[in-house]
Image (cartoon, rainbow, N blue to C red; front, side, top):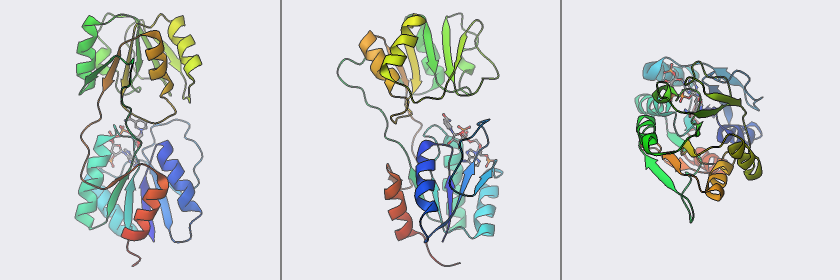
Length: 246
Ligand code: NAP
């Protein structure tokens, strides 16, 4: 059964590992090509955009894809919307594999906002240094701000707020390590997207321990496709919902 996995995440890599060892499926992993040094993948991989909804629908038909798993990042809303529309157009079942969002607990001081622009506006009442862990493509709302910023990203951003300190790292992170970093840069406020997952959650615990406010950007609205939080649940869905016709 031909399967397409839209990836670029740890969850997609986990699913790829399961599909690679499962004789029922012939799966291809698709990456956008954003990361300069992508991790090795256990499946045949194609890299680059499809050319919008029409291009993705054409790909699904041409390759005889029988089911699609959208395992992209929760904030990659364009490709997720494209997948919904293209799968509907091509008559291919679609499911989403995601990571659970983080939730605030006792001792957390979260300020939830719907967008990155709203996060930037909220900073007016919050202390420096502002630690931006939002991804290198999300810095635009902060560029013109006269604040002290610490920016952490996997790859170097094309543009940075003036005078910002840049740290390149990809995690996973520890609470102790995050506290050392935050103290060293006198961090007063943490800004993050609600990406969820374990690999980058230590910053939230560190912020709680240090009594820092966290500006939390909520996820964009989810689509209507069924959603799973483990790779094995996604495999079960594939076995039940993909069609074996070629
Ligand atoms: P996006 O805004 O949702 O997508 C922009 C365009 O990039 C899409 O229209 C599509 O181009 C192409 N694209 C995205 N993901 C693709 C994939 N897996 N395979 C082929 N083409 C893809 O995406 P983004 O937020 O820039 O994220 C890009 C990639 O990085 C995603 O795969 C995502 O999983 C990963 N990622 C994103 C974030 C984040 O915070 N946004 C964080 C970590 C990893 P066409 O229209 O030409 O098909």
